[in-house]
Image (cartoon, rainbow over all chains, first blue to last red; front, side, top):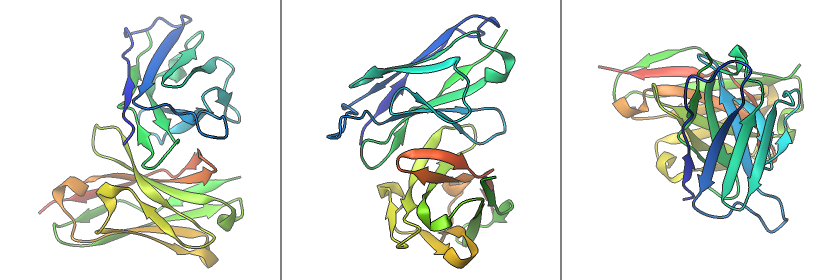
Amino acid sequence: DIVMTQGALPNPVPSGESASITCRSSKSLVYKDGKTYLNWFLQRPGQSPQLLTYWTSTRASGVSERFSGSGSGTYFTLKISRVRAEDAGVYYCQQVREYPFTFGSGTKLEIK
Amino acid sequence: QIQLVQSGPELKKPGESVKISCKASGYTFTDYAMHWVKQAPGKGLKWMGWINTYTGKPTYADDFKGRFVFSLEASASTANLQISNLKNEDTATYFCARGAGTLFDYWGQGVMVTVSS
């Protein structure tokens, strides 16, 4: 199985600052079609996860431009610009390159 | 609007079975896959597998082969998850999520299943 390893954040992050979350995969997530199959989700407290980005850097419908995904191969980053209180929660990366789809262990973001 | 509405919380004893449902609305049910995701209390997300809503063919992650069954009531735009011979470690919230290709773009609200004697 592909193992997804997420980094931690220096919580709490002051409102208005930027935050970057790292995610590393144990195998390249590039598929033969050239796409890189990495999703990012935010799970706010008590809520279901929400898709933020897919194919590494494509924002999902309705997601703020403050969220930007980047990376390639096995190393990925989600950057949140000008953090707000509503961005608080746990962020998960997920590989959908091959079965079984696997998630990282999550990165908690707290806002000051 | 697109919605996935799941059934209510369940309290079961070890060895019993449970069936939870995920009713879709706002789109053509058979055009998208349905994934199932487990979240134990205070823990992260774990993908259980998915079901092809057009053919009914399920695919299970290794940890969910045997006691877990994905099924459909396509006429009712509903996907079901049945867990038999429940164990304490099955205590978790179970989410359904629509699969648009490899995008998990809409999620149900989750069903809390508690297994306790």
